[in-house]
Length: 93
Image 1 (cartoon, helix red, strand yellow):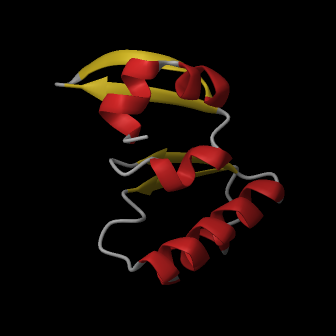
Image 2 (cartoon, helix red, strand yellow; image 1 turned 135 degrees about the vertical axis):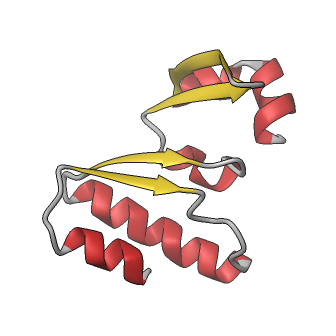
Image 3 (cartoon, rainbow, N blue to C red; image 1 turned 45 degrees about the horizontal axis):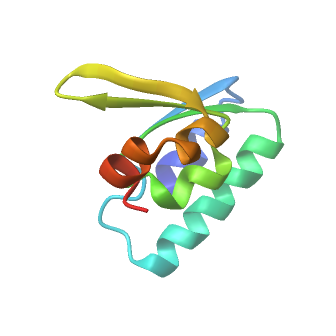
């Protein structure tokens, strides 16, 4: 949260978050997701690299799924959810 706060002080147009949920308890994940949602609502574009994508899926406008260093799927949130291979393999739904 401190690192995100430091970034926000610079008034960025784009924020890159690399594995923001890694190692956080479910309660802290929820708080961070709410903070990301608020940042997004303030007009800042957020690019997130995350292996555990399920909690962030409601915030996604567009997603890119990579496997073995290759782009295997890209699409809107709705397209990600509608693709059974993506949800079973990468989102864990």
